[in-house]
Amino acid sequence: MPAYEAVIGLEVHAELETASKMFCACAVVDSTSAEPNTVTCPVCLGMPGALPVVNQRAVEMGLRVGLALNCAIPPFSQFARKSYFYPDLPKGYQISQYEYPLAINGWLEIDLPDGMTKRVRIRRAHLEEDTGKLTHTDGHSLVDLNRAGVPLLEIVSEADLRSAEEAEIYARKLVAILRYLGVNSGDMSKGVLRIEPNISVRPVGSSEFRTRTEIKNLNSIRSLARASAYEIERQIALWEAGGQVQQATLGWDEARQVTVVQRVKESADDYRYFPEPDLPVLEIGPAWVEDVRMGLPELPDARRDRFMGQFGLSRYDAAVLVAEQAVAAYFEAAVTAGGDPKGVANYLTGEVFRLMNSEGRDRQDIGAIRLTPPALAALVTLVRQGTITHGVARQLVETLYAAGGDPAALVAAHGLAQVSDADVLGEAVARTLDAHPGEVARYLAGEEKLLKFLMGLVMRELRGQADAQVVARLLAAQLAQRRG
Image (cartoon, rainbow, N blue to C red; front, side):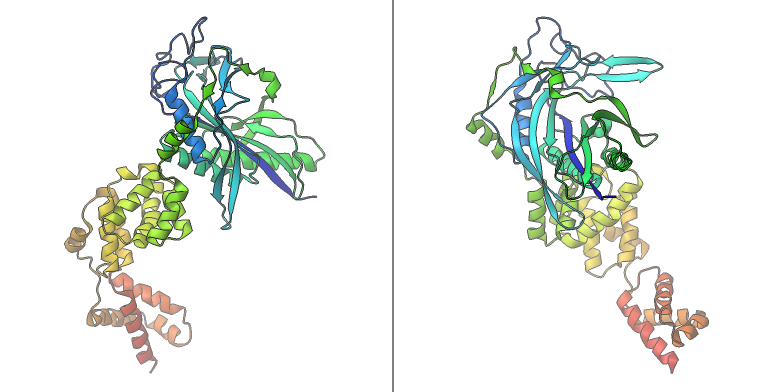
């Protein structure tokens, strides 16, 4: 049987964080908490005779994304009607863009696990309006139209991704950019960002594009990875069994961890696109584009490169720190407060991330934890000065994370300073060796692996506060003396 590779392109639908909807003055509200159907008007309800008006702020946000993704911005773009008959779309069509999108021909570079980089092409980024929200309960479907008409930017990649892992990396990088730009929170649990992979498989080395399926409305990056991996294996099994993949729209059953057919996939002709007669063509001049470009923030790749050059971090560490804008800001605040950059990075990506993960806390919420950047900087400085050991520092991170406080004050109050006095440490080493004659005898007989065990016993007796280098030297000397 031939080896197979996946061919994946992603469609990412990101609600834009404007104050009002795409084509009317209705406010954009949280569709998970607002009272249903309270933020609507004749325009977003699709009433006869209601005329849409383009939201300029939404266009500017779309331009920000397009430029951040290295896209070309055509001199004009055009809205189109897309026939789309669903209960949550009251007009019976969606205003979108088809032939003339807002941004085209861009790219996004991702870092792969093997240390290589890959450029994923962006076909287009176009503006449209979101649909309403359906809630299915007790055999009924409830329609909430608060979300209908919210500005939506659809970002479509080329089919350049070759595995579920690559799709996950690309999605995380794209979400980070959207957050940096301030156009989308990335909170997929609230439906403000949905991902739809288009997947096919083919023999490795082939350049053909086989029949693909599309998995709709995935609401987490974890679901993207799992659904893509499942669908890849499902299609490979079909081909190997002599079957055919049917072009279809699929859903992801989270409970069963399987994809399920929702409907046979439509083609563009089925949507019967035609230019939206109620909206003029958007003319986007060079001056407007440059004005938007000048307002772009420092983006993740640029910040990663700066961290490498300015702070001497590895590419991997820098990339981890800039993946969330809030984490990057926390790191810089700690360094500005006097923390050694490499030390801050190590404790931040190690101990602090571990504690946040144990709480199920999103890294973008790092600014709300009790361990402040100045406190982390002070902790790292205490380690560098030799005042405390790494073991004590790890304990203090947990204390500071839970309750806040000043590291130096905690060290003084609890007697946590590192012990370096050779006489004190020598006595502890002697007590440990005297208490474990069997292990000492085995070590002296040639079981050298016991040295690490004896070292651990000494460090435990001294509550992890001993200078490990001094202990190692004294332990070796006393063992040599006992060898005679």
